[in-house]
Length: 142
Image 1: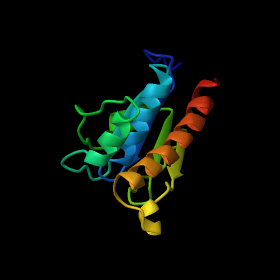
Image 2: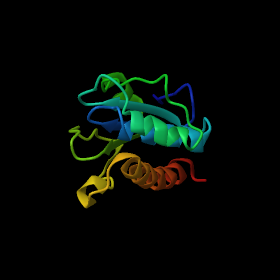
Image 3: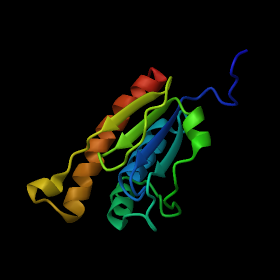
């Protein structure tokens, strides 16, 4: 019996702890890059109340609008269907799923070097962006 999915696009779930910053950045960047070629989900292991305003602004600078988004919890149904699960940062704890690509991205943390505010967020965004570019290529073969 073959598993037929409604879409042949590869799919990815980006997870961080609050789903207000890093996973939103990754999802926004992947959506812009893939332009529909990759199905993108995002969630938090302990979803916060709202998005990080600096994360939103750092994407706006690249022409990516995520203002309508909100933090969501990790859903089992999504975990069961995606091709890849990417955990951003070490705060979020998630068990690997057998048969699903699973990676933990220990993203750049400029605050450890005394860099804060929008400068910090742009560095985090650009680090995640480079990783998203590589993942996109691996998922699509482009």
